[in-house]
Image 1 (tube, one colour):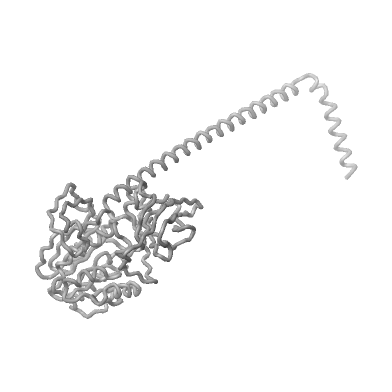
Image 2: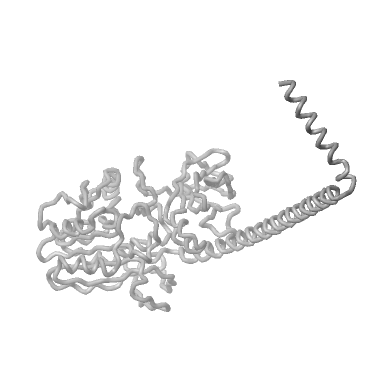
Length: 441
């Protein structure tokens, strides 16, 4: 099955400015072997394996959590004018499916996205340009929006910074900001992305390349679950903090966050993260992060806002509550001094919610059609099997009846007078045949 992030009633004569980002999902129980994007017969490389928790939830298939794909069509792959865009997905069972979209490529204003060859995201690292309009975007942005006020006037370390977008956000408030990541390609991307606004170094969370007491604030969001020894990583984060410093750290909540992420080595529950922090710091405050549907009523200035560092004044109301323990992510704030009060932070993802609802309806329709087809096929198979069993039982009964008739006939023959009278002749014949065989030998 293939899904598009555009509602089905909009998949015709879509006018799009270049560059064009293609985002969707493909899932099959045997596993997807490849996804191809074809523009007028020409294949364009696509990245597969991106997180799609919404697809897994809609299909009730946990394995579909990494079913997303994406690619970017630039002028070299898609010149101005009409094109047929075809998405083909093939699974390991040899089955394939495809959808086609008629698009019209238009003159665009260009993209300021940073894209470096050699950056292998593997669907795990958050790269803002790859996740626009997704749950992943608002989840990551909300954490840094929450932490940004803590960075004011401080020396900040963003541990596990990836491509450094979050480090740059913190740098707008901090005295100085440093990002560290174990991936050299990610650090190279971060340096170009930051354009001198922050410093980046290659380093391991288990052995940070900084002296003791180097930072006033250490932020480590969605990184600690990637190391084999999370407790040792926490020791390192504690080591580089100054005595009055703060640590802000998060982890997917094991048991709630979709299982099976091959990049996660150990996810911490709320209780485990809290206990780990309390064993290292005098003061700990715990926070819970969950993703919600949202609607915004705003003036033109608020409606047009798109900079995650631009705060939109608003009153926040909720229509659905959560129970402690059902949060997707756990966030901890720790330090030896009295902890500051940190307001809740919300990040809105544009029109994503409406698109997600359309997509879920589309997914459920596909799921219902697939279920009905499978049910009909299963019923037909069951009826065919029952017919085969009935035929086999009928043939067996006929064979048994024939055998019984033959045995009855033989028994009657043996009991007859002629059989008894010819018994000496049969015995003499057998003796003669036996003697002839002996003479020949």
